[in-house]
Amino acid sequence: MVFESTVYPGATEEICAPELEAASGLKAGTDFKLGYSPERINPGDKEHPIEAIVKVVSGQDSETLEIVAAKYEAIIDAGVHRASSIKVAEAAKVLENTQRDVNIALMNELAKITRLAGIRTADVLEAAGTKWNFLRFNPGLVGGHCIGVDPYYLTSKAEQLGYHPEVILSGRRINDGMPRYIATEVLQLLATHGFPIRRARIGVLGATFKENVPDVRNSKAAELVLELKKFGMQVMASDPHAPIEQMHEEYGIELVDCDQVKDLDAIIIAVPHHAYLNDLPALIRSKLNPRGLLVDLKSALNPADFLGEYQYWSL
Image 1 (cartoon, rainbow, N blue to C red):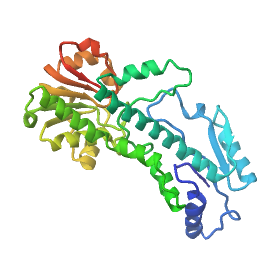
Image 2 (image 1 turned 180 degrees about the vertical axis):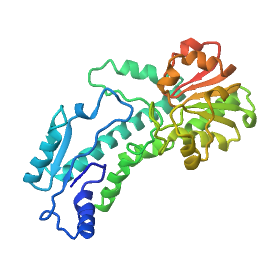
Image 3 (image 1 turned 120 degrees about the vertical axis):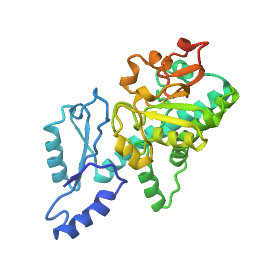
Image 4 (image 1 turned 90 degrees about the horizontal axis):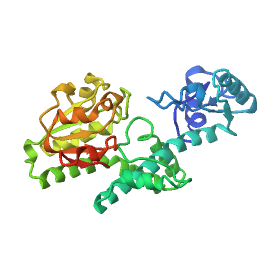
């Protein structure tokens, strides 16, 4: 029995094994064997299909490990990595997602600092990226059912063991707070330029948790829409991928067709789907009023293309 879900170190043997034993009447290690091989699929990423990603495999004993490895080697062209134990494989997977979360949190904190300093984060990253060992991450909204959730598995286990993690939880607080931060910045920018807040028309393009996927679980773009509505703004959200009924059920948000998003005081490119990028400047000019606010959360645009037309802000 091989588990692939992201869990904290020990979950497979400490939780899953007893549950299986209770349900089946069989004994783990005797009547059936346990393995763990975490999934590493990146939704929306067509450059890294499952067969091209090295598969971490593990088993509760050496015989099981080789059986599990052989099964995955049959379909994984990139090969497998044999972890020394199930706990090691579990920890490796949750670390992958936690590391990415912490690195993005650093970029989000940097974005807040560069905003105060009056410089553009994308320009800083471009300059820093010229160093050979600089790791490139970008600021943005961190949602979904992996990066935005999995670090809590690790911190929960750490606290069970008597250790209070600081860096991981700090990164989580920063990333979870980004929708409110962005909404507040939009409010201030509109107010500074004389827009009446309660009548301001705001368009949000993108509602899924990341680009080019229909998944809206733990969507921070959806949270951003809700934060903007708290200020009394007229917010219209559109997304070519997001399931309309699910958005309504989970968030109470009524998505509208992109054609209905127009006559805007501000437009927020929250999730730059490929569907938007084909002719994004023309799309913006057809919807945003002159001197309106253009918020480009992931720096999908060249701000020089809009000089003198709009207020531009990116993370």
